Image 1 (tube, rainbow, N blue to C red):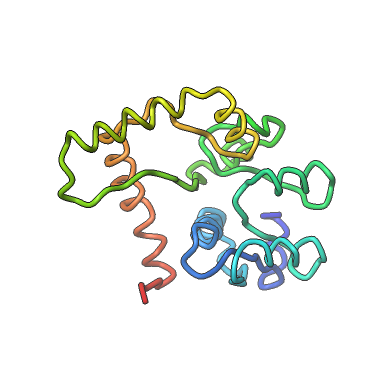
Image 2: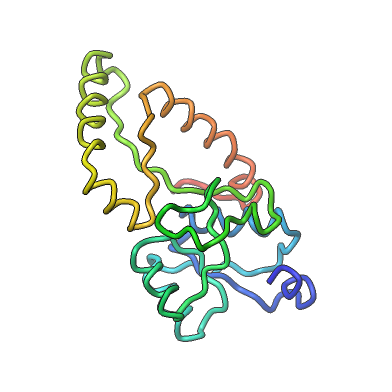
Length: 185
């Protein structure tokens, strides 16, 4: 795909869940890392419409989140997942290589779901929520369900690790956001 994009400038586009979505940022990171800056971004109102247009051939590339539905479409041959952008292969889809394995070091883009509280929440309350979360994450059925849905639970997470992760992600994505001129409305 990279070779095709470089040989056919301006002929490819990718669909995302919308302007400012992690899907768009992932697409822009891809373009930056591969030197394919003329791939056109097509923002949709959600990933569903982008995937629908991908399946019907209206767009050649989509960058959705890997979900159970996307995995089903992949296994049914309706879409082809070229790579996941996680640091390692997904437990729920070990047959799909990572972008790093495909030769794109630095192509790490992953959604993050976390629990947040107001800034002045007491440490005791934060620890109580963290402990309750650890108890819930010990449920094997829940873990199987999350993994089958393309999620990769971080079982060793703590409030401090989460704060560091968020700070690192803000620093990492800042240059991409600046490059595309994304502004908050």
